[in-house]
Image (cartoon, rainbow, N blue to C red; front, side, top):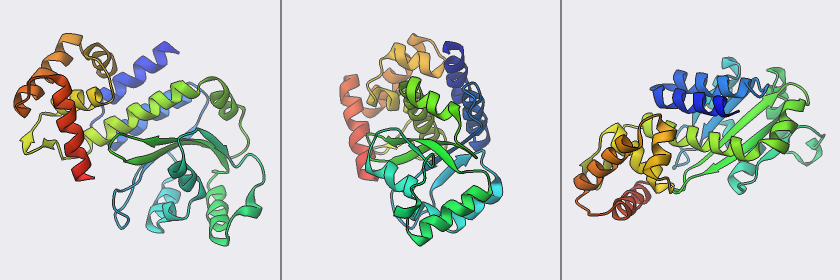
Length: 241
């Protein structure tokens, strides 16, 4: 399992676009016999389009986004309401669904998406996302992950979310100060309580390299300590919503 996680983190570190991130997660999921996944990051403002990175059939993802199905998707609604990993679609719960929700599930089923496991993600900036793994029938792999590997998959989902937000966002300005991608990435992990050693392991770089980028960020922000830099970063992200 350690090899799977190390490879996953290396792939995340090397990814620079949606395709790279999609391949990284698909490769890691396959090691646990999970075939399909979808990462959906909700926009901070309702009219905006969510970010969807997935290996679901493209015809389905296009329809999902164009029809704004995330607004009525009961799986996403549940992910927004809590932080517990949950299974869905394994038992018949359709009686509690609205007409529109049943239609959504019927359309998804036509593309082989009938049941799954979802990991809610809520970061320190208040951003909400969900990582789902789906199958066309009740799959022992879903139950196995829920029972044995929940913590590991939470960690993977969080790493994926943080890396996507950092690398696929053009905004690396903190209080008017422009940080390099590495400085921003290291500081963002520091916000999550990670030490330089932890950050180095996650990003596939040496501890002293991670510390170097953190020190550069501290100097650029005009503060003296890592704690102060983390506070500045967090405050700036809250303002940006």
